[in-house]
Amino acid sequence: MQYKLIPYLMYKNDEITVIQNEKTTCIITGTNLIDFFTRNDAHYNLSFI
Image 1: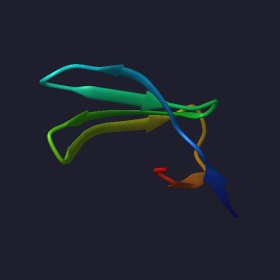
Image 2 (image 1 turned 90 degrees about the horizontal axis):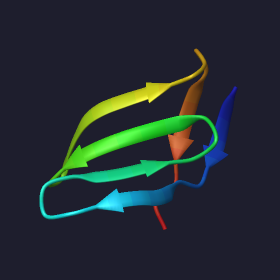
Image 3 (image 1 turned 30 degrees about the vertical axis):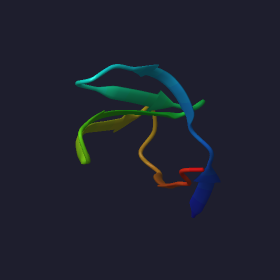
């Protein structure tokens, strides 16, 4: 099962962007997703708005 999750921007500067929601945290440099982790083993779709 996949869930549609809407992330929230938590932090942004010239080097990194951190977005997260209730289950997922992403750390992004430039346009590259460098770290993606979740508190559960399910697969998630992230919707960037």
